[in-house]
Structure formats: structure tokens, C-alpha cells
Image (cartoon, rainbow, N blue to C red; front, side):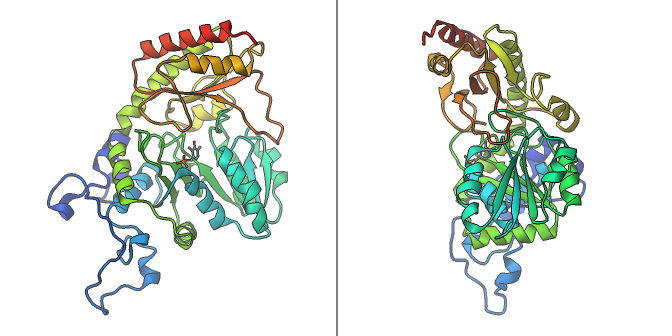
Length: 398
Ligand SMILES: *Cc1c(COP(=O)(O)O)cnc(C)c1O
């Protein structure tokens, strides 16, 4: 942290003043991009020991990170309320690194049924080969119902709130209390919550973010972060990231830091547009339910109200069951302002018809689904475009 008291500042002030360059680059506002593998040491006497340097922001070799990684690490730790952050190569790496840090052969992991698809794939197809067993739980489960799912060897309760594609908001403090009582660590994918959810104030031990989304904000960089709040957790996460050879390009870190400077205004605008569009859709006859955590129709809305201070602009729409998945696909194709594509958090709107895997009995959503990401376009234009899309939905003949 640059100075005392910075912790109490507002989100937008933090985004403007964390991770600046200052005197280190001759007074320029922004840190420079430092590319490098070898770091020359002044003398053998001054060459730091790898074991001490590797846990700190110290230069010894490029893979440990350097002066372009550190300001971004500081920024993410600051906005999530943690102490240390590890930047990794993608959001998916931010999921897989801590899972490997906290699980070993013979351990058991609890995963929400609504987890980001590739995280499910990692547990089922990769961790399983290393003797780690995964059980999926209903993301809307109560702490009382979750408690009996813990086994003596359960070391990780993984959470993602709201869930990917279906947006169930979880009772994180309630579930975390159970996990801690059972001696397990609580991991959370906080990509949707960014800073609207403060993980370490709600019992999370390790917070994951795909910086690829709103932090980068321009759909041109893949990057992830793993943030923790204790020395013990830091040693596990940092040690595992280094053991796996995790590294991110300084150019990408620089772009992410640049993106973060405007994230506050982008998020404010996108939150407002997202709620406006979601509310408009909720009033349409073709729509069965809107899965936006800020609307009462979303499962776990009460936990969003209790634990979050805002919302990003990613949400789901469930259409009436008489419409087919093909009709929803036709709607997505009829949109001009929405691209059909994965990822989100950029300045542009996206529409993605969704198919989800569910194995813990939370799979009936009532109709075909579409995930929307609302960008920075004017809301009136977005709504006019969606109106055209609804016409295509209705016109579609099976
Ligand atoms: C996109 C996403 C990721 C993965 O991020 P990438 O940078 O695309 O690998 C992880 N978790 C969630 C919830 C995501 O939406």
C-alpha cells in the first residue's frame, strides 16, 4: 500500500491512485512496461536468496514477476480487500492454481453445480486423475443442508456467486462458516462481484477473478488473479503458481492496469444499463424469468441485497417454454448490436444462448436461456435491438 489510510478511500479513488509509478519512473503518471527474464544482480553478496525473494515483490528472475506486475497485484488486492495478489495467465488459471494449492491426493472438494464450465471440467477430467474427488452441490443449498456433505477429507468448499449462466447468488457467509467449522478452506470465483462483493469480509479465504472481464474491459487481454488475506494462504497460492510456472506478460498487466483506471465509471454505467434492460425484458410476454441478481426473480436475490453493493451487467434470460432453443438462437442472430460470443466485461454487448451441465438436481430453469452482457452503447439502442430480436424469436418456426 502506498500510504496509510488508503484502505478507507472509495472505490474510484483507489482505482485512480493505487499502483501508480511516481518517482520510480521519473514522475510519469503510469508505470512502465518492464519486459525481462534475466535480472542482473549487483554482486553475489547482494544477490537475494530465491526462497526469500520468491514470496515478496523482489526482483531475481522474470518468472517471479516484476515492476509491471506489482502495481496490478496491488490494485486487485486493494479493491478486493485482501493483502496479497498473484497474477496468473488467464481467468481459468486463476481457478486451477488455487484448486491445486489447496487439494492433494485423497482430498475431497465441494463444487457448486452452477460453477464456470471449465472449472467443472478441471475437477472431473484433471483433478480426478490425481486422486481428488469432487461432489457437486446445489448452489442455493442452505448451510444446514451443506454441513452433512463434508467428509473428514474435505479440504475445499468452492463457491461462485452468482453462478455462471444461471446467476444463483449464494449465502457465502453462511456456507463459509460451515466450511471453517469443518476445517475446510473457502475459495470463491468473484469475477462477477469484482468489488461489489468483498470476499474477505464474508468468510472467503481465497478469491479468484478473471481480469479478462471488466478489469481489462476491452476484450483484448486474458489474465487472472488470485487474492488472499493471510500469510499462510499466500504461501500456498504463490508457491503453487511458481511451481506451475505461472507467468503473465508485462504488456498484458500494463493493459489490465490501464483498464482498471476507468473501471469505476464503466461499471457504474453498465450496472445502470444492465438493470434497465433486465427490467424491460422482465415485462415482456415472451420472457418467463430474468436471472439478474438485482431483481427479485433471481434465486438468492436476498443474499445479493444483503452482501453486494452493486451489480455488473451480465445476466440471464429464461424464455417461455413454448419457444425452442433454435428460436433463441435465431433471436441472437437477429441482433445487430450484440455479438454472439464467449467472455464478457468489455465495452461491447454480447448475447450467448446457453446450455448448462447440472448434476446436483438444480437443472430445471423452465425454458430456453440466453445470457446477455450489456456494453456501453446507449440503452435506447440496446432495447430497440432486443425488440427486433424478440420479433425474430416469435417468428421462428420449428
Ligand atoms: C471467464 C471466466 C473465467 C475464465 O476467465 P478466462 O480469462 O477467460 O480464462 C473464470 N470464471 C468465470 C466466472 C468466468 O466468467
